[in-house]
Length: 272
Length: 240
Image (cartoon, rainbow over all chains, first blue to last red; front, top):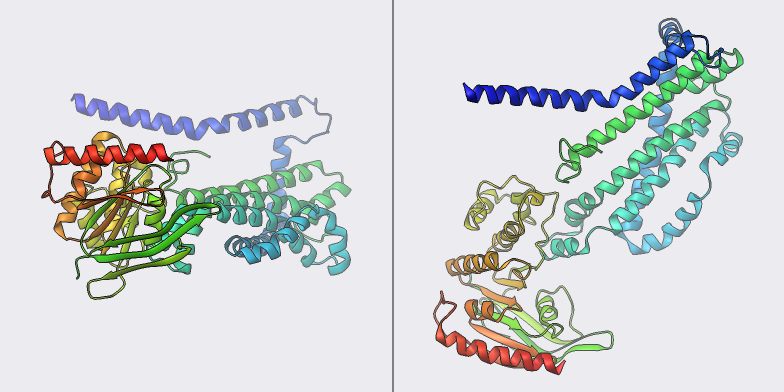
C-alpha cells in the first residue's frame, strides 16, 4: 500500500518535472506573442508591425495559394548544398592541418588570413563572377561555413590529449586506428561546436545572398513584399528564417547528445 | 606462450637538452624477474621505463628486449594516470588494440573485481576503479613484459594496498617480466624480486629479495632492507 503510494507520487513528480522542464522555456515566447497581439489589437502599433494573427493569415494564404513551400525548399536547398560544401571542405582542411605538421605549416597561415575577410563583402564579386544564378549564393554560404568548421577541427585535433595518443600508439594502434579510436572522438566536441556555429553563419549568409537579385527563395519573398509594402510577409519571412535556423541547431544538438553521450555535460538529461 | 622477456641495456645514455639523465648505464634483467626502480625525483626512473617501452629513444647505447625464444616481446605499459579513453565503455577500453576477445576482456574485468561494470563510461568510476580497468587493459593481452610507471602513486593508501595485492595475485597466475617505477620503498620490497636504486645517472644499489611471496609488510628481513634503501634514497636526495 505504502509502496504503491510512493511509486505513484514518484511518477507524478517525474511527470511534473517533465512538464515543468518541457513547458517553462515556452512561457516567455508565448507571453511575447500575446502582448504583441494585444498591442496590435489596441491599434498602438500604428501599422508599424502586423499582428501575429495577420502574419499567420498571410502564412496560410501563401502556403495554400502561393509558392511558399517552393520558396522555403529553394532556400533550404541552398543552405544544404552550401553548408555541405563548406563544412566538408573545412573538415578536410582541418584534419589535414591538424594531423600533419607539414600540412599545418602550408595551409594554416593562409586560411587564417583569408578568414579575416568578411565573406559577405565578397557578394558583389561573386555576382560579377558567377552571375545571378545559384552558384554565387551557394558559394557564399559555403565560404561562410568553412571557417568555423576549419578552426574548430584544427584546434580540436591539436588539443587531443597527447598522453592518450601515446597510449594508443604503445597499445599497437596504427595510423588509421589512432585517428579513428583516439583523435576523432577526442576532437569531436569542438568539431560539433564548429558545425553548430557554421550552421548559424550559413543561414545568415543566405539572408544576405537572397536579398540580392533573387527570383525565388525566402529572400525573394522579402524583396517582393518590401516593394508591395507587405509588412506581414516580411515578418513571416523573418520568422521562417528563425524557425529554420532553430531546427538546424536542434538537429546538431541531437547528434551531439548521441555521439557525446559519454561526456558528463552531454549525457541524457543534461541541457546545453 | 613463454613466461616473459629479458631486457639488456648496455651503455645507454640519454639527455634532455643540456641535462644528462644517464651516461652509459648497463642493466640486465633476466626473463621472469620483477624489478622495481626507485630513486629520488629526477633520477630518471620514468625515463628508463620509457626507453624500455620504446616511447623515447636513447641517445646512444642499445636496449634489447626479447622473449625466451628470441622473438620481440609483447609489451604493455601502465601509467600513474589511468589514461582511459572517456568515449569508450569500460570493456571497450580493455579491448583497445584487440579484436574479438570480448570473453577474455570480461574475464579480465572479473579478475580485477569489476564484473557487471563492462558497459559503463569511465567517468562514472572512482579513481581506484579506473586504475583497475587500466590494469585489466594492460594484462588482457597476456604481455611478456609489463611496464608500470608509478601505477598506484595517485591512489589513497587503502586503495593502493588492495591494488598491490591484486597485482600480486594476477601475476602469480602466469609469470612474466615486470618493471615497476615507484616512490614507495615498501611497495618495491613487497612485490619485487629485485630493487634498483638509481642515483646520478647510475645504479647506487642493486638488491635481490629472496623472500617468498606473498610477503607480509612487517617481515623482519624486509625491515632491514627497507632501512638500507631509505638511507640510500636520502643520500641520493641530498646529492641532488
